[in-house]
Image (cartoon, rainbow, N blue to C red; front, side, top):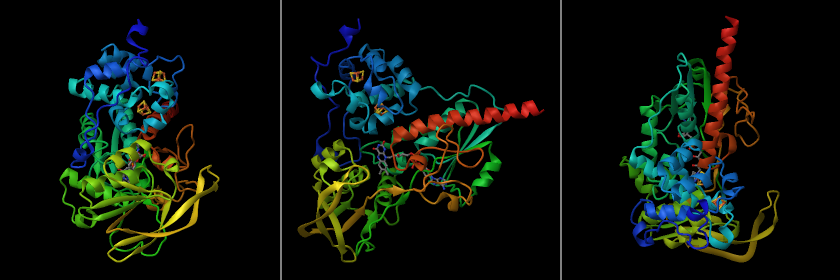
Length: 477
Ligand code: FAD
Ligand code: SF4
Ligand code: SF4
């Protein structure tokens, strides 16, 4: 009976996996929570009230069948739970780790307000981690022979990798091109190990390689081949290159040595985690330094927490709005505070003094009237200017798209006014015949779960396009 197994939200307390003590986790780059044991995963899954209209599912970008895989977990039918979870997501254990669940599935769980939501992400992670351990994650097997039809995918981030998997299973020859030396995009070089340990990404990539997907790493489109050269090589192309142009601020001293970009900083930290030699590592090492991170998004949260782990003397996060109006996840702020990060709310940098940097002068801000986006705009307060010690200043102000028509050597590649690629939202086709786009390069800086959703949708659209091409040739013959 469903009632006996489920609906335990009144008598079983919400429990996330136990976090390791903050002082211990600041010593390493391992994920901060211990995994559930099976009894705990079953207990937590059993809290679900099996809603007729599950708002958790509605607000999951993949529309994962959450109530059903929670019920299967609560019943101890883990392999079936995995099959169901895997049916709608290409990387459930990654989403379970890094989705901002408080804004998506869990934030919309009906029992959230009175009892605390079902711990959906943690159960999702548990299910697929178990599937990997038990050998339930099956190799990729192409289901058809497409007579050598091939696709070229530019970008090995979650959007590109998801599309690669779906198209390989359909039987296409799949080539993935990436300018980095490792696949994974921001999963590999952006997001730190304490949120997503790298073996989790690597085992996914190894499965794709074993399934016959061909990776061309260290291959930059625009440098090693033009877009049109790739179009000649393949029957269709996917652009999934993400957004990498860092936004900047224009204040005196911002070009001083000791002021670095967030992704440069995080990439070097991740490379060191892989054991790579990083020649300029010292310039990006927070050890013993007073660190100021400028920005209030998730990238800023990753920087402050990385600086803690590098052994910074102090870490401050300077943000021009207040806690309630910051874009970053509240959970991440809480983790950062536990680890010793100090948030300096309602403050904006005025200038950086010294070269190398030694001090950030900052101005107090207040929140004014709501702007066009509905958020209250920060404005200068007359409460004064103050100094912060800062030997390392990290700019985490967000990212814009690179100029792809120029980089790819094709002015006919349509972009919109934000520089993201213009696509037909039904087919995800760009302005160029046979060229599709997905992920952050279409949405602007977004989330992994949306990149996965796009990767799945675009693979279906590309398959339709290539199947129609074959059919047209058959009719013409
Ligand atoms: P990407 O992951 O950016 O991958 C694009 C790939 O294209 C890269 O590998 C790049 O090398 C390659 N490429 C670019 N140009 C070329 C070229 N010319 N030739 C060949 N290859 C090229 N999202 C979450 O959901 N949760 C989080 O906790 C989270 N944390 C984040 C932390 C940081 C620091 C950052 C920056 C982002 C974070 N995000 C998070 C956002 C998330 O990582 C992205 O939304 C997601 O990775 C986008 O996927 P994508 O496949 O579109 O692009
Ligand atoms: Fe929640 Fe993300 Fe998993 Fe969807 S993919 S169920 S939003 S954690
Ligand atoms: Fe279960 Fe919450 Fe989803 Fe309802 S909204 S089905 S209680 S997880």
